[in-house]
Image (cartoon, rainbow, N blue to C red; front, side):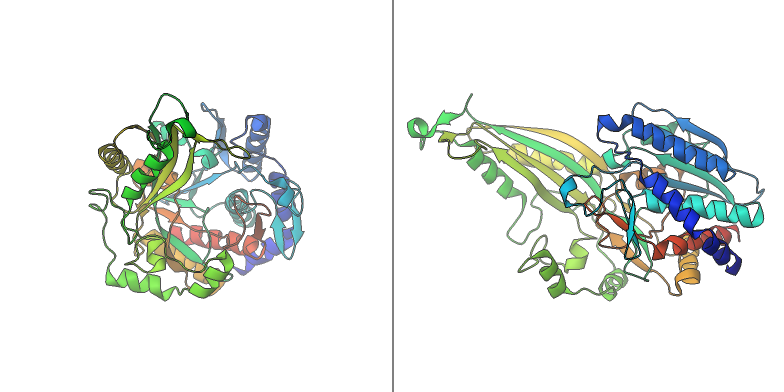
Length: 455
């Protein structure tokens, strides 16, 4: 480990400059005007993979943005590690809130500021640098390595699942490692052992064949906004529990040990309320502690509501249409498609008189639960301890990364989520950044993990 540390120290400036080069490429997957930038990012990464000794480097075109594949398979009887990451980034709006331009990487306060710094170029780049460092030191790797780096994660990975199903042999491995999550706190590593799933719906409610004059028809005809609010109010009870029949049927309650683990992580309620500008934390199921509600319980949220006149001033109409966007965060064993069907059934059965209801289905992604006593998770924990000097905490993540479950199910292998970001690094927001303290430490931790996997 000391030799690796010395080598990384001597290469630090070069490594950071290369990260800056990658961060300068505005590879925004959701905006068509950045199509050329997407291609530039794939070229940059593929050339870098070739330069560090990776073989069979391919830029694989899809119906959307390309996937980059590379491998190094020279260790007989050694495990194969598949590294997944993504090179696409979120849009930068509102650009006026950035203290420095989002695609001109800037270092201040020992942090590098740029779009993609922590999500996910910075963290993905750690794996490339770990492989490069091991190759430079030993001329070989302790295990076999494969890379699968995509350009559509920020838009839901619409083409990666098909690529996985069509290329199971190419991607076959013993473990998938992903760095697209965060640590618990500065100097406190964390392994994410659970991700919530996701499903989305949009409900449209219609009454008359057009908006109506509130003076001529007010008090006599149904108002679409009123009816939609009435309908949506049936989705929860007074204590925040989702009021959809069979919604909780497949939810597995936490064991007492799991509850103790979550409680042991600590929670400063007053600090959180102050930071969010709130007077209380009463969302969700009130019969569960806050940390359980945001990580281990399913939710149903209204993400958007609109109907009637939206412009400046007043327009005295009775709207004939109203709409709402709904998403659910789901926990282990819940099936997103089944939950969508249950919600559709509920909305249709509870539709008020005098209207028609139409529900369209959106994205769906499976939840994931990783046993913390699995061998690969324990090797990751040992690697963190080797570098950070303390064991990682195991945390359940309230968010969703649907492709993680897809990797696990398609390849039938364990997935290890080794994050090196920190809470508050503004991913998806202005002034996104990555703490450089975790740059060399992240590379060292990945090197340690690869060496431990060999044993």
